[in-house]
Length: 124
Image (cartoon, rainbow, N blue to C red; front, side, top):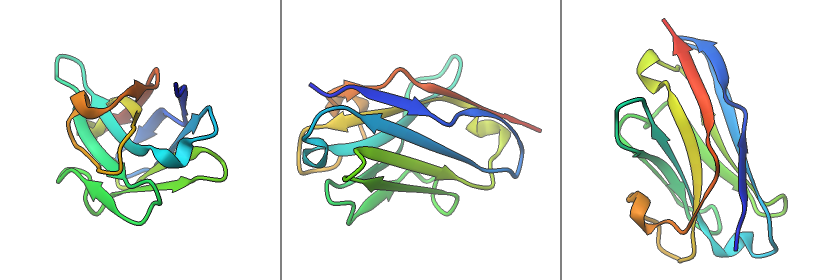
């Protein structure tokens, strides 16, 4: 069982930056692939980024490439999402998720545990 708690969301102007954090409970954090997803009002939850267990490889949705950076600190049981050059269309609730596997995935159905989400609002 893994419990995930996101933080770092907020209101920011277009072009600004935010850094999301997701703290995980438990002693096996490094056994989990971690991912970030987001869900805007009236839309389905969508993949943003994922990172392998060691942090050696990262994956991004096209909408995030070049602007977002995922990272993790296994010693701190935390995964981060640095978001730069934010756009109004990035407005959503952002969720972190954990997948007990060595393989990353971009489908929400492939993740085992979820945080409660943190709201990101980008004003124009």
